Image (cartoon, rainbow, N blue to C red; front, top):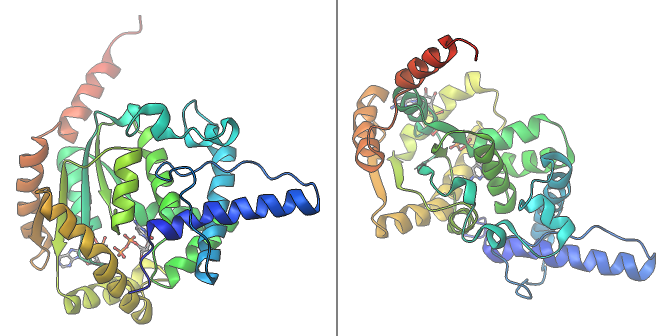
Length: 310
Ligand SMILES: Nc1ncnc2c1ncn2[C@@H]1O[C@H](COP(=O)(O)OP(=O)(O)O)[C@@H](O)[C@H]1O
Ligand SMILES: Nc1ccn([C@H]2C[C@H](O)[C@@H](COP(=O)(O)OP(=O)(O)O)O2)c(=O)n1
């Protein structure tokens, strides 16, 4: 294995940062801002950094913690304000998970690279009006910004590896908090057990986990076809092979984890999209009810807009 991140690998950031802070204070009297402890790290449980592999994580997570406070406008009780107020975290402030999202209906959408997660999510949104959040898209948006953090993320994705959990969970939680909807499709997440634990602690557990099952030869063919138009730097043969390995090593344990919990619905992703969608519909309606369709929402909005001003 070796390419999956672990809770310990991400915790390493905290200890590296603490070491840097101490060094700076000792040698120059310089002061680095306090770093918020990730919600799942208990005080005093951080592990020691052991190699270069950890340095990349440290740099990337350090960048995200620094930009969090700058970009989020530091809402009360958010991870951003905890940078200023010490050890309190979102989970501590709100209890287990985010209070604002406690009533949300969450569906995780998993499957190998190219299994059709995005395709099915688009169809679900059209029919049921969920908010679709793709972890990969959120990370690619960061890359597009061209920031130091974006460059770090780009390097990790090009290698077919997983971006540190604190970064992905932060991006997802912020996107969820910005939305007024209570129903979310979280696509391409969690990619490893550690991500599932962090999300469940910071936000809440999912109602349903859909797994699109597809053999590698079919996935490869689809991805190579998609590569002609996607413009994605990770849609090349070498990176695709690495992504398959990451999926088997890191994400399949997540699939098995939710299967044991009775939350998983496994759907064959081999047939054409509309056939796959028939099974998708059944899974969604069983777990979340029919919800409010997009048409119903649009209709309601048109009535509200037509009301005369008070
Ligand atoms: N059921 C399917 N049958 C054939 N091709 C599909 C199917 N679902 C998706 N595709 C195609 O496969 C490629 C990968 O689909 P996408 O939805 O981007 O996958 P993912 O989000 O899982 O990476 C796309 O080019 C898409 O058009
Ligand atoms: N939870 C996640 C989701 C995606 N990533 C990174 C690593 C993945 O190879 C890339 C692309 O993921 P995305 O879900 O967009 O695409 P594929 O399912 O691989 O086609 O993003 C991550 O590190 N953590």
